[in-house]
Length: 116
Length: 117
Image (cartoon, rainbow over all chains, first blue to last red):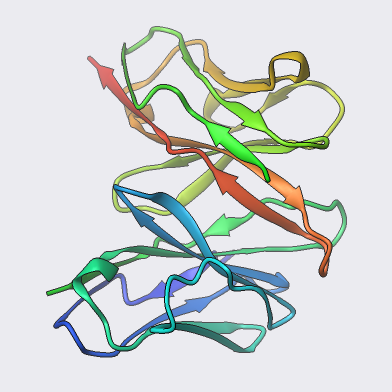
């Protein structure tokens, strides 16, 4: 079975540029999560969706960050304009609410973002 | 709000030795607890989970964890470590959210495991 798929795996861009990260959740999962991982702050939840609707975006650091989920099989996280302090690994995860509650989240391999 | 503490940032063990990684949580209700492992350049892989019932849970790769409510702990154990177990390990607690159900995870800061041959 295909897991959570993220693209690109690596992104290097200059400060001020727009960055778009992509995620395809596991088919049938109705929850999608975006995380950021840094050495200083560890794993932080940025935003999560349920049935394509954003539920909690309190972790989004600034208005420069935005996330969308136009359909059940695709989500984007966009940073515009990007800054060097946005450099991190960004993970997407998905989970299902069917059956038992609190199904585990399944993670993609992440996008390593470097802003020069 | 829930929180997770992993008091050991780094742990080094010899191959074949036993392993215990500590995890303490804070949560006002019955916790949903998880252990994940992250290898370099990879995402997080679920090792095991605890929802209810038997407090000793078995996971993949020979790992197990024991939920101790009185100590607010969920320590991860393995009787004999293999060199391939070298990775970073994260403990997480899940909260049942009200909107739409499902879970929202809070992660610990991770424990980096080094295995000496």
